[in-house]
View 1 (tube, rainbow, N blue to C red):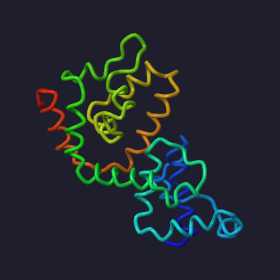
View 2: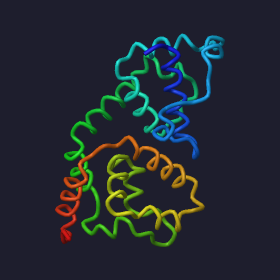
View 3: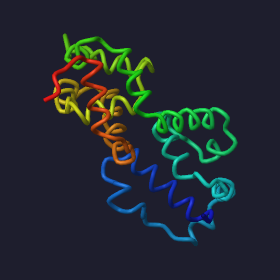
Length: 196
């Protein structure tokens, strides 16, 4: 990948994860840009360094799903903290069923108790996510299976923290591949639900 292509990928993924309107999948990662404008950038050196990575797309997805804004492209190069996060992200995604199952064991035994909002407080599931007791992947998958985000959106509509998390979850869903049948099975087993 060339430095310019890396720049395009970075901008497209950044727009996907930080704005409501841009969808990386829908627009196939295309954005308005020109090679001439890229050549005038002072930070193109960092894109040249990043372009040497064979796993650049996965690395950038892991960076943007950490929910820590990247203020400067230089932060992405030779950053041991981001490399550690990326390694963890890869490990989670390679053994998603195992990590999903382990995360669910950190929750209350009754599925509904994890999702219900009481006294305008964050639901238990969201609190566990904020405490880093469950992963973003678990939150996205569980919502995908149980569809509780509309309920949370209704009751937490004025909560800026939830609004940011909901956007992140919605945007990440496009990139999260998993075996729906297997995750459903795990959910049914952990929460002792009837499988209908």
